[in-house]
Amino acid sequence: MRVVVDFDLCESNALCMDAAPEVFEVRDDDFLYVLQENPPEELRAKVEQAARVCPKQAIKIED
Image 1 (cartoon, rainbow, N blue to C red):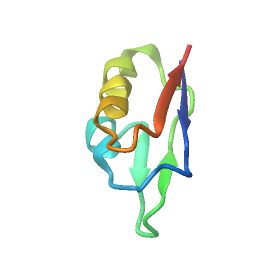
Image 2: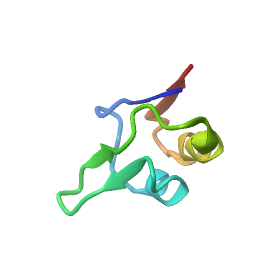
Image 3: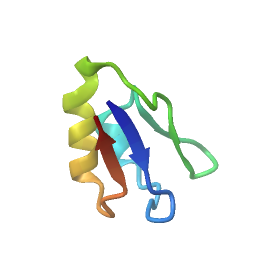
């Protein structure tokens, strides 16, 4: 699994970080960082939830 973020769409609202803090982080500079571009399979449900809650649909999962 590979996490892909369209940073042109991303508003760094941190909903993804709430869903999957192991994978996403919004830092003090208000930018989103992907901590694990290829997270382990056991985090799939959290990453899928993060993609669902993104208001701009900026997160995609590639297998």
